[in-house]
Image (cartoon, rainbow, N blue to C red; front, side, top):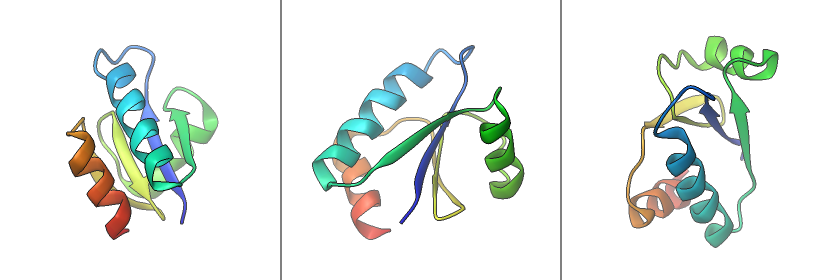
Length: 81
């Protein structure tokens, strides 16, 4: 499973989303890749996934969540992937 979080340096909610998703991934034993949409690797994932806003969670190339959620919701989403 490939889990990617799209963020941007200008996004006010991205730091909180990054902390939440990173914690959820750690608790689930999953590696998460954080990508800035201003960088080439982040832009590539935006194009491939169709994400239109950040923060956005991509799992195996599919947009699965936008914004932040609770830690329990994040863990459930990661478990179900």
